[in-house]
Image (tube, rainbow, N blue to C red; front, side):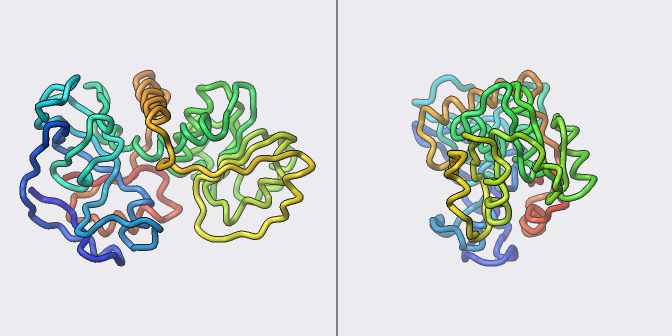
Length: 312
């Protein structure tokens, strides 16, 4: 079978298309024929070797994906060979023709939803749900500001927040990005740095780039407000007193800190949101496995305002 492999950490060129032995599931595993594999910025952090915890080499990237069940271990229940599924992770990486998964990583995908859409969920949708409702404790009627709302995770956050009855504000880097955020369902969108935000009463901020925005976030929040840090690409110096007078909370978020119960809640919510049309991921590009290196360059560009996929 064909798969992308990393033999040594480094630039995108370390992503090599290779032929490896066919995978076979053990008793408690599911083998999925991958029809689409999602590319996330997190994949690039691992590939480059800059993330604090790195996978063993050789390593096949890809956490998100969608396809059909090809084989089942003898102890696996609740699934059938041929089922259409989307993946919230895998044991062997989704940037390949096949991926081994544990049952809790495999979720049903109805016939009317494309593999491209299924492969666009995973990390972005889970991050959006966890940031809003588990870490952010969002409530109907509150106002939420989503920084970087034109990105894939940002769009999912807008859609989930709007459906939950929040007043949704977003920020984007240009006019095209503003339109993407409005199309996702935001009530209003500001360009980065727009002083008009200071007139808003904001209860919750979902922060995709804390090293640029955190100090300003603390000034924007209403009394008792919360900021949830989803992403950061460096350090920032803030004045801690900004948290004191309004009793503001700064909360970190990591998908890898989720408990088994939180994961079950999250993926049940994502599945329901997908079924009723709340989650509608935007696809930016689809490329063959042979262009994996190019997708790792694309996914970090601000102008890409949709999911990038590999098609095994």
